[in-house]
Length: 539
Image 1: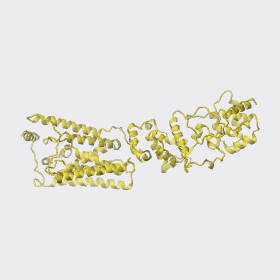
Image 2: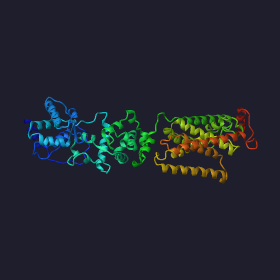
Image 3: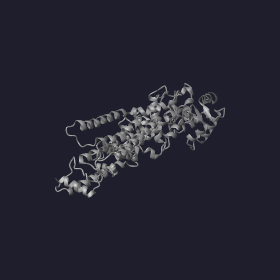
């Protein structure tokens, strides 16, 4: 009887509070929590105070799991063994589980008041440890706690009605901390709502948020192991665990991309697009092209200076090394490499700087998501189609500069926006910006060609060819994160149109007559071309 007096004294020394806050306060789970406050001790101990120590949160006690939750000591070994035997007696059907009603009946009607057996259950219940998560599991459990607390703070008709399986008198708020959170049920719609609206969800690595949102979509059955339509902790843990490599993929780049998107618009599609941002492999393609163009500009600046009688510096508008075997020369169209190599030569540092800035900024952004070879294909297609259209519409003009490739990369963003409209952040804003850019480009080209008093020597058709290639080839080669059937058809139509335009352009370049349309072919040596340029510039 001494143990009874000890337990009674213990309960009488505690505050007389019968209710808890409807939403438990989030705290780190302790290794041991005492029994929750109880009503005035008219009896030695309320049966529910014992029940809530043993309960797994679902209104039943798994007898086999109780022994694991009670640390063995020299003082409680006998009590633990006796408690397990008593719980088996409270399971008349031998199911291995004791239900809420069975335990209530057993404790109140079968166990004698002030009996040694009743004291054994109290002692065993006091020794139940509120086991927290394992160290590797703790980040996931903390996330789960935030999710559950959000659900409880903003009730919804989606929430699970525990009265469907538990008596109305059942107060789940009295459960141990870890048991309470681990046993909760969360509807997938509430999971999505939390990620979209809760500030706490912003701390999730983007890869984890994608994992969660993916499980909350229509194929939720993959995560719903017990097929009850709700997500519980074990299911959450199974499907959210990522490798350390995946968890650390939430880079500063992705954080920055997410930071500019309203929280409610950080949808699964948007997060998937941002997750594709990767610096592995590093976006070196456009940087290498830019470096090569810069080196070629410096080389020809020095070379041109050595040819002239007076020392000059290459100015903002030129001169251009027209003698170079890289420049597109309409009289040397038979040198096919010029249809590509002209992109390496620039006329003046303003021409160079403008092109390099645009292609680095826009090209690297595409390369981070769509990888270097796709961007390179778009860039080269713009260079080629720009040269082909320039030679057809301005047959007597030289062509130099990377504008064809630059415009291809620029307008590939329009194709990317078209393919991944629902996945893109601020898609309408991006579309408006692209339309403004298109209007300015074509407006300036029309004014410079037909209205300006002194037209510039800008190759507007090369710009147009690059833009056309950027859209047509971009739609085909850029990654489509969620393909629709009509998008696949449109992609093949786009690439077919591109090749048709290029092939027709090449045929016309080869068959249009000289000198009626094109200048006569010039077969003079490179040295003579260089000398002729020197004489012209020194006059």
